[in-house]
Image (tube, rainbow, N blue to C red; front, top):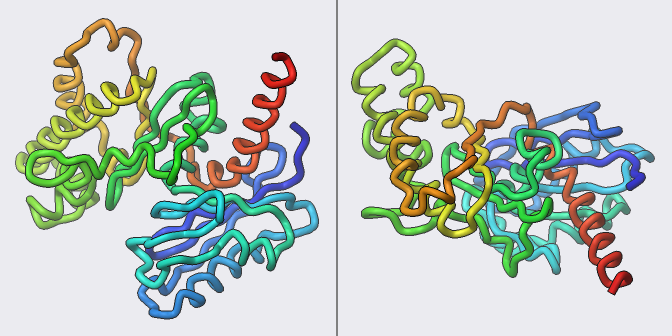
Amino acid sequence: MEQGALIGVDLGGTKVVAGQIANNKLVKSSYKLIDSKNEDPQVVINEVISVIEDLFNDEVVAIGVGIPGLVDRGEGIVNDVQNIPSWKEVRLKQILEDYFNVPVYLDNDANCFALGEARYGAGREENDFVGLTLGTGMGGGIIKNGFLLPDAHCGSGEFGNIAYLDATYEDYCSGKFFKAKYGISGEKMAALASQNDKVALKAFEEFGTHLGNAITTVKLSVDPAKVIIGGSVAKAAKYFETSMWKTLLKFPFPGAMKNFEVLFSTVENIAVLGAASLYLDKNEKVSVEKQVFENN
């Protein structure tokens, strides 16, 4: 479909990153640190507006924003963002549309990661996969038939919140695992592993086993052809891939694992690209549905 420039925004707990995409390329980017602990919700709203203003011009036809939490897509309301305590019920879509006078699309940040991989990354040749983000937490997005899976509350793919052992998958398959059990960040643990530290290597072996169990649950839930993993912890993949696959090869239905792949993201700013693509996902999906209706 023909389009002008798009702006994608990735809102995190400490900073907001934005990019302008034109002709399927990231042509400009901007970021700002945010005061996410401020009790006034307008403070972070103003910071989001500011980073978009850095990139906005007459060529921009839509804005997409990835939110680290659940979103009411229909109403454009952001609810209870864990890393931004003041955001309890923010009508962000209306606020940004009133300010910039272009359509605004909101979605969960892990969904934006999956959509970015579908259009610009390892999922370009695959219509059916799950994107997992492993960082300070664990998020997920589901691509079915080339589009984000429709759902009621923007919550499908939140595999990290599924109960596992004495907690949840997120507690064992993200940076939380290293913090809780070893008292250091995943980044520091990876640095130790690079020096062949035995404790660090053992920690990543354990991590891979837990991740293999999580991916088994993903496979049993939605049966994707691929799982694509991103996030800061994913950068240490070489330390946990072996134990991850050792666990995955115990899958109860071996035939379903034929040609199954676990890939790792390699594209910078993929969540920003995915957020910008929310406009395309929505409008192309409507176009396909219209064609199906007319053909019937």
